[in-house]
Length: 181
Image 1: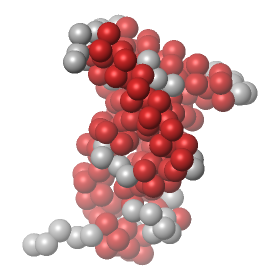
Image 2 (image 1 turned 45 degrees about the vertical axis):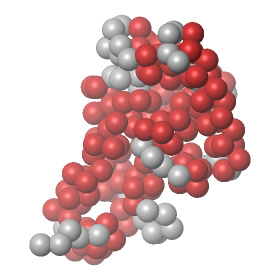
Image 3 (image 1 turned 30 degrees about the vertical axis):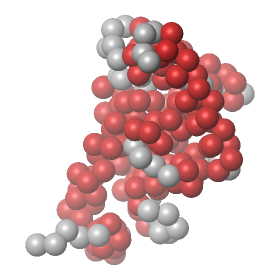
């Protein structure tokens, strides 16, 4: 039996309330979504699972609002990105984006320093600001295109390219300092 397209599954889920159709979408995207969240949280499995679950719940409740302007996967990653930042904001009442960035960095280093993340790549990711880290994760680890990253993060494409360039440069420097060619 041929695999149903995302659009067909979305139609079945929204028009007929078919939860099995949505379950198929969950199974299709849970691994890449969870991997994305793992990189944002510095490797915290439990937090990544919780955020992924929140993402899928929001996607289910908002599925009728999906307008097919981007792929379902891009839409889903945008929800995940927002769920992650909502979580960071909920940790403390934060007013400025600089405070949010410091909180994200703090959270990342908390999990990176406790031995749960031993990879030098995760350590290098920890050196990046949240936007750079998200762009690097989406581009290199999730194979997303610049335009798709811009849609997910709601940033201009030029800003995504700048974040990628700065992030790559910082990671290269860090990895070279730690014995990589």
